[in-house]
Image 1 (cartoon, rainbow, N blue to C red):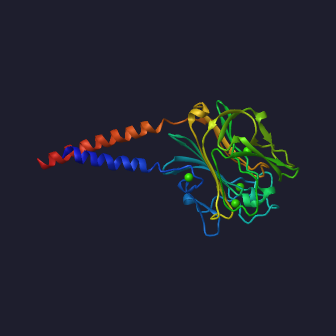
Image 2: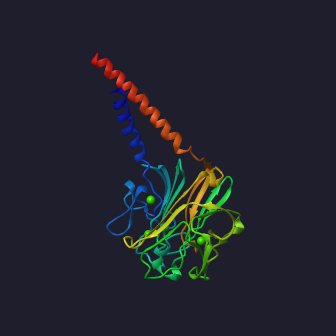
Length: 309
Ligand SMILES: [Ca+2]
Ligand SMILES: [Ca+2]
Ligand SMILES: [Ca+2]
Ligand SMILES: [Ca+2]
């Protein structure tokens, strides 16, 4: 009887512990706290409307506790989804099609998790779909994740890019629009590269801040879990989600994560000045929770036995 009760308690506590970890790299950011409001704008946890930008400010950078992730470091700046190209949405101009709306970064036991919400949807059309790549600056150098994307098309309302699909490099005209797309069958979406500055294309459209938004060279480090999703349920938004094992980043301190459309009209970024260390593997956390549960069960049973005697 002792064994049955103890095992039952252990099972419940362990399942509760594992249940909190129900997060998934699938291009859906619901578990990050991102949902859609009635008007189509994004909603983030208790913050209701994702901090709209009030140029020249750049949204909100903060930390939130999110179940399954622990602390999520975020840069939220969802400008009005009705804003056209002439409206200022970021440091380098407009509009909603180029809006960087949310960047979330979490340090879980199974790796560095990154979530991005943006107005970069393929149905923006060829000229206005040009997603940049994800940039991770660490104490061991700068890494880039190829995001892919392919060519925009105004009838392309649903599209999923995932690990292994072709990468893309967007070739911009002098105004920052995509004039052509270079298909990269040998450089898959979800590829991680360690890089030098020379491996990045510097955005140099007029008035820009020379943001390095696309990675084109570097040393291949492997494939990571990655999804870019544009669905018909979201008229204004697309989502990128990635998980990078710390070992692939050399177990280095994470100093900055950033993303921008290739023209860098808007930039999402979060910086840890001293660097953020990787956290222990989840296995040890599970072991500790089982040990704690065993200790609790033992005390409970002893107390119950004494009370009955
Ligand atoms: Ca997800
Ligand atoms: Ca927006
Ligand atoms: Ca923005
Ligand atoms: Ca790319």
